Length: 259
View 1 (tube, rainbow, N blue to C red):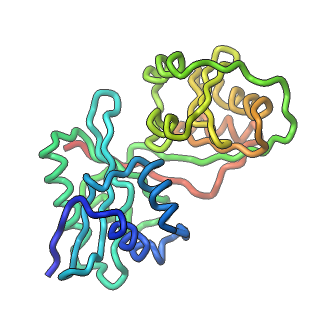
View 2 (spheres, rainbow, N blue to C red):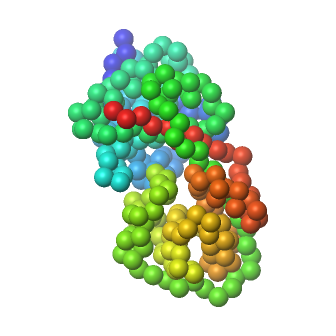
């Protein structure tokens, strides 16, 4: 008999994720430290909003969720669906989805969202059956720059945040919550505002046509030699490639549904 419970403890959630992702399309190398620091803290997944499926006393699957307010809407994001390989195709994912959907409605959540790796057709098909639809594509870019020029002008977080709320592009794993956790630094360059930490450029607030130019110039003037940037804007993708950024093979669909 399969039964569902909300709000698992950290150890149970970790063990189920580890087993469920043991044959994942991309090896996660999931240690307890990585699970705590990256999956839970950095990616803003919250166990209080997550669900575990049990076969008897054995935890066999997890639907990991996070909750944020985005542009005045309450959004619940699936940060990971993992099912023990021995328990797949038994309707457990649907049971988890139904449980978290009912819970989301009780919280008056406006929208459900998730990201899924392009090429993971079984997962994409499953989410579509649940009612999710693709709303964006997320691309990942890298650039190496060894020559450092004149440093950028640093600005305070308040000035950055005033403009950030007005920008159009939103990426869950790059938003203000993540910036604060990463202790991001904020800069100004040619009127554009930039947020960066640990060789990641979280956001560039400027006109669409200037994003790639600003990003490239920033890599020449920030400390470090290797930078990464994410974007859901196809025009920015083209501009970054033309500016010498390398696009990773990894791409994701951003999927959502209104409830």
